[in-house]
Length: 234
Image (cartoon, rainbow, N blue to C red; front, top):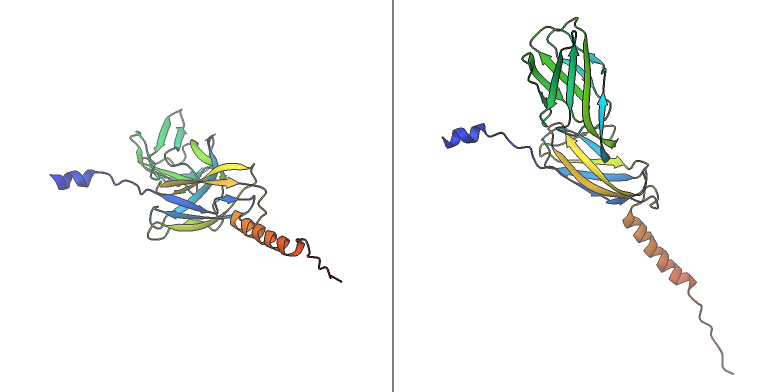
């Protein structure tokens, strides 16, 4: 009986974590993001700033027959668990799809087979039990994203242990504290805080600036201290 109970308990997602280096940086400068505890060999998206909600209508899509019918939303990365989609068919029939938080979609429609949402790329899809070829469909979506998408253009993928290292560029924002969020396609999420200070020159870090300041002080003390005047007694 115990083994049966254990078998039906759903597996919890891994607890992701990220660290930033440095934790204070200037505009358009580089920050290294190290992540652990994510899904193995999963794509990762990195967002910067506050969460924002959006509603998109008349989304372009493709597909024939039973599907999959698929498309893509406009903002990335997507907060896991926040995505909902609606399909309006000819005659006004509306079908809702909800985000399970692990990259899959659910629906109470008896014609629904399966659906997916990729939090990193924004691609979504759904498959039906009936042939929808030639039927007019209108897709809309609501979801939460992060103000800036700072995912490197080359993409980020975790290794077999669920870890990754990526370099992001600080966007042009006002000075202050900002949340950096990493999400993978499995729905694992981790956050950390970055302080943005425009007084830090591009390419330098706080540590480097402190080191340079120390050198300047030493140099200044050595070369600009008051010279000694020798007197000769007669």
